[in-house]
Image (cartoon, rainbow over all chains, first blue to last red; front, side, top):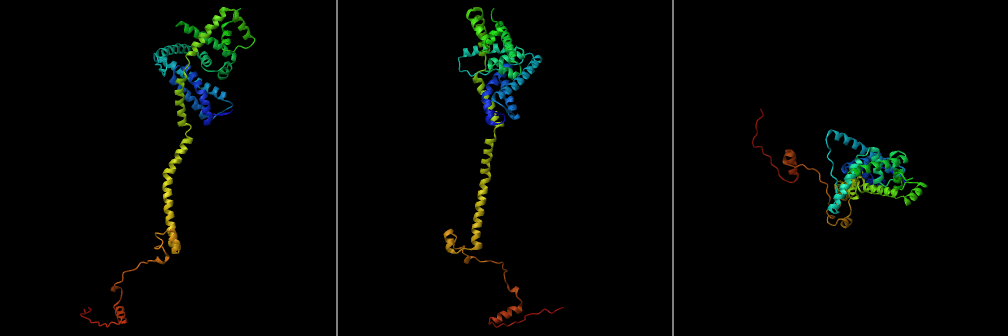
Length: 172
Length: 178
């Protein structure tokens, strides 16, 4: 089904399905929910304002992931430049609606923090691939399409990223 | 020979094609070391996956961003309705009143100019029908107030004479001309 990006109905259809994926990709790349929200909004603004036609919903999804991924990477680069200038950049607090027990929330929060910190230390090309693999429903082929790399390259990067993460997480 | 990590990772992701998939499964059937390694990789994957941003966290933000688009990019339907309502409220009401007033003027004017007989008028406007009858309409022209100054002495005398009055004129005093 063809997608006209500035058609309200088509936009909402894409938005409903793709926003959670974008939000996860961008959040796990930037480690900042507020920033991730801003980036997702910006990506969808571009999507709408450009009034493009996509052959399928998946093509629209890949375009949006590509744009938001680039925005996220730029933000991360800017952030690291700022971190050199300022000793430590204050991290935004993550919001939790506490329907679970406090202890459980704390454990989850701690786990998330450890994993996020480890992901943050990965080189960009490994980080992007592992984030897409672990936090979206995309397979190697789809990740390859988004990143314009080969499937075998995706496979190798996933393997290397996991190896690095294993090393980082077992150090703690 | 044992299965290497790269192959195990691919197997774990369900991305290993045949015939390697079957071969790896056969190997895992008898190799404890590879099974253990696969378990380790599975646990690592689960740990990484457990850090996923929750649906709750996303849904709030998703609603907020959508609200932004509703306001900034999809206001056409709502705004059009809004403007339409405004027009109806602000402009249509005076227009209706003006039209009604015009109608009344034209309606009454038609009676005055073209006339109707009183029975027709009685049917249409019982309250004002009789005074509106053409027999009761008088054309009023501007008149000047008439005084004795408007007439000469000769005209006054002639008029009184014609009316049968005996008129005697007497000069009381005459101022000589210089």
